[in-house]
Image (cartoon, rainbow, N blue to C red; front, top):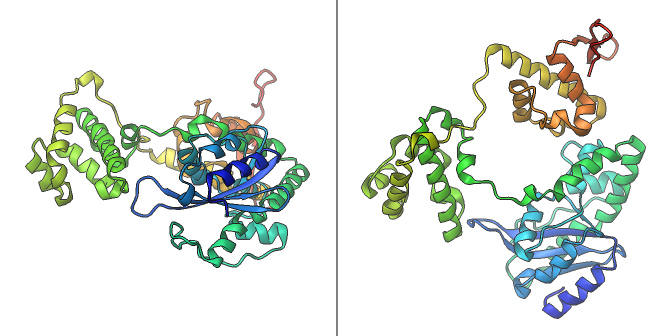
Length: 389
């Protein structure tokens, strides 16, 4: 157990001698806005596993020297939330990430690719379920907690190596590199403007421009308040109530409290926010950012696009959502000329995106293959000066 600053510095020096390290975290996120980091598990190439006691040490910034090192591969399973927690705890953005869950999904190991599934499928090891939801902030940790924590990184090096071999066999190394490169994008750590995010709520389509301006500022106030109190956003205000306040625009503390008893203590402050937003000039009022309602024809086309995505996913033994989520498919139908769309770039474009582009432009047609039963695309006859993309 690494539970002193001196031991942490010693571990950091050892980690710098590794080309790859396995990482995981245990944290508590119940009833708080910012998760409280309790433990960082680190697996070395040698097979040694160290547990960093974040509760006892407090300052984990020295670990940032390793996390930000682009010459050391950090292997994590389902990395998203771990990366954000580590960034907050160390002040450093994790670089050179390999997410074994994403890789396993991309390489056809399993659509969901839990850690236990990966260890069983790739390492032949069954990990017993442990005290995942126990109190990780309480000290001392129990033997079962320690064993569970170690198992979270114990097999990641082996999984990583076997996934790389599998990627080379399937000729999908470029797919893998493209997906992992996303973790090096600073956007992955950038906090989205809560006001602009609120404009993406379905209910925003019902709002007038001035009501949208109120929605933006109330949503920003909601996040500021949740941070200040360190409570979940929903304990301050629900998303539905954001829309409700934007529609009614209460101008006094009493009117705010009347909309929701829980908001009475913030009545004066929130009424001030609403009043100021209500003074927004018409030309500066935002518009909803939700996708517009689809016509019957667009709905039919969306189902066809999703069917072709599903067919491509089946051919490559991966989940359809990994190629395009429902919202991405909708955006592709509504804005087919968006060059930045995921289906217009990289391996997704090669697998199905280019076919979808040709389909929407009328250069191919769809039929069912009689032998496989799968959807197939056939090029239409065309002149030599009109090549298929």
